[in-house]
Length: 133
Image 1 (cartoon, rainbow, N blue to C red):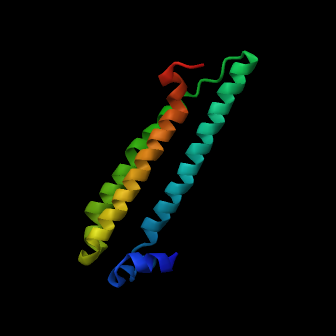
Image 2 (cartoon, rainbow, N blue to C red):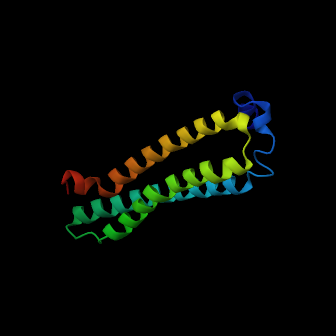
Image 3 (cartoon, rainbow, N blue to C red):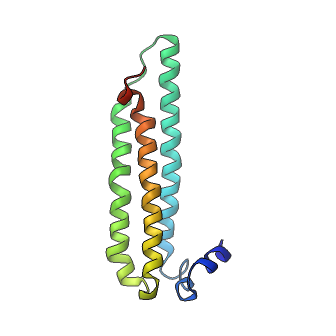
């Protein structure tokens, strides 16, 4: 992984990336990825539960509140983290010559977040939005 980053980033931006000041952001990123996988897995499990309940003619359990809370957390928390990272963390610990690389990385993360929220919305509420059973 480091050899890929070494080609993409200037050498000045590589020093201290995963050691001195990058430990907390790296831990938060890993936690975010774990929670993203969990959210997708829960969405698939809830969808399967609904489909099985429809097949046997039962009413599926009402998971609307849980879905709403989980999706709401995804809508609010990652943009807040990106804001904190930009306004506070990079300005305190970042290197000025690395700001363009930092902005590009945040843009990629934002696009991934946007896709994840769209997928979770369709996974959690797609049947309700499109009026399908």
